[in-house]
Length: 463
Ligand code: UDP
Image 1 (cartoon, rainbow, N blue to C red):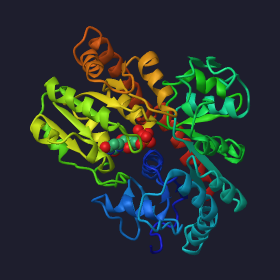
Image 2: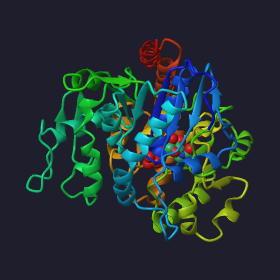
Image 3: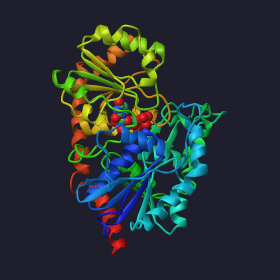
Image 4: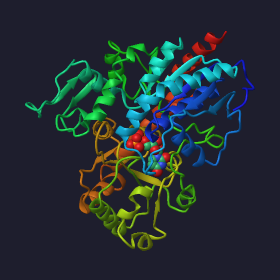
């Protein structure tokens, strides 16, 4: 990439772990900060970086993409990830590899910026690349962290890591967890990686390792908003001052001109299909970028969607496509659409979508709250189970569906959020959160002010 045409812009490098749920919020923060007159270099591993570019119709030129009065550039880490079998590396492998080669590749990238006349003013990283804070600190550059899950989940992990509360153990597996500012959580409601029975020990280790050097970060941003989680933001402040900058959803004014960050190319024509459907009539189904239905669950889903009669848009990622029952797509043609990846943010904001069957990943939670779409909460693991509790019991925007999904239970859940006696109340709650979410990121809203103070600080550093 060539010399920057705006040498006087302050320059923030944002580094993301190469996962969809991490790239999306950091890239959206990048767009918001760039729109306020800051130059951003967005980086992640080169394999995922190239996926982002090739899944998009927007190809950045040498100077990046103009966003508001700033600019957003992409420059990827030379991490030489080339799995010889051509398979997607598993999470453990890629984390270990990144930990080994990431720090040197990242310091090279920062050094290159100075040589190109784009001195780095600030670094922002997200979870699973905690070494970025060490690299920045060693180079004398301040570094902020963007936490990409809820404040409640942050507080839960924090308390666990520092042994500040009692959690279920092998000898005492059934105890509930009471934390300040958070409603009591049963073992099924705490992030599943903290359960004694959790089989993903290395993932738990990676999550908790982030708390080892979090004190080195100059700030901890969080993809949430003050009005959504006021009590926990208040109570955890005793240990860590969380700065809400969310909900980080696709900024509407920039979405036409900047790339979205999809790792899989989205089927954009599903929006045209949605145009042909009645208002609030469509069931949207997506389990995000990692979790899947089993073949049996797919069959139950397909059965209910075939007999139910309501229109639906179902995201079945390419890696799960073969699990769909034979002949299903032909059978539902016209009334149902199956896509490999959707432009989810736009789908949820489309007037014809009436409910969202979601795995409750935190990005999906914030996107549905911002769009005011009621949910059928179908969490699988990790923080999703905690998010589901909040969606259903605290925000009151939907109902829970128990795993494994079964046709009658699914039928009842669809009925409950779309037509049942509680559907109106659920829709009213959803509309209330939609307004609160929009206000938080609107000019001078609570999160917008926090982003503005960061931008002011970054600009002052340049002066
Ligand atoms: N997403 C999308 N299209 C899809 C499915 C998901 O754009 O078909 C996006 C979704 O909008 C969200 C992200 O992928 O921003 C998934 O993040 P989330 O935290 O919800 O779940 P994860 O994939 O991390 O489990």
